[in-house]
Length: 234
Ligand code: CDP
Ligand code: CDP
Image 1 (spheres, rainbow, N blue to C red):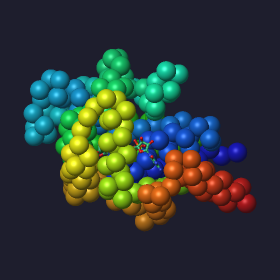
Image 2: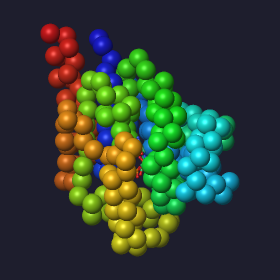
Image 3: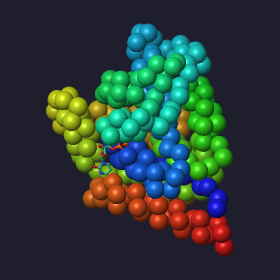
Image 4: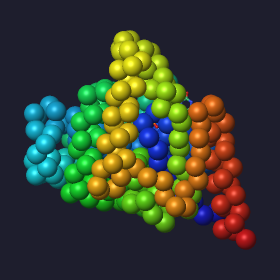
């Protein structure tokens, strides 16, 4: 049976990581979180105090960085972590999940040469199919010929509430307004940037999961993948 390449794109908190990981598990595919790569480089930039306005320095930093995405350990899996992330060999799986790193990642992600380096890595990691990759430009730039493209959406208030709940569970007490503002600001930057903005590819299927849970959304995507496999077989 052929092994599909599935691209899932969408804004922050739309459910990409959770749903992509579940879809990959149901199909026995590899799950890859491209956003974790932007977050890992952003963390390194913050730690080294590289100015986030200095495109050349950010590009040099990215070129000099090695990121590995691995399946989570059983403990990490139980804690809801979806990919293990190693930055130059150091575990940064939880450190990259802060609002400050998210903001820095979305600034870093506006730099064209940085994207070129990370996109090449993502294409290498996903070559051969049997992969569910999620991000902002997977269906448009990373795998424009993906077998199945999903654009995952949800209302901004719902997305912010989901993120807020995650922070609460980690004992990080932010206000819902603060989280909504962070999500809105990042969405706007991601949608309006010149290079590879967040847009729905013409052949991507729009799935609005505002009123759908993780399992329903994942099963819908698996159904679409099965349909695709049937078409390929006929
Ligand atoms: O990766 P992305 O930012 O798009 O979203 P996520 O990290 O997968 O999902 C954000 C939160 O929303 C997680 O805690 C999910 O469990 C939750 N979620 C949900 O409650 N219902 C959905 N249909 C999808 C995600
Ligand atoms: O989990 P969440 O949706 O909040 O963010 P993420 O997927 O971890 O991505 C963090 C940031 O990296 C995004 O706000 C984008 O600016 C950037 N990103 C991107 O530009 N292209 C991708 N393929 C993935 C992430």
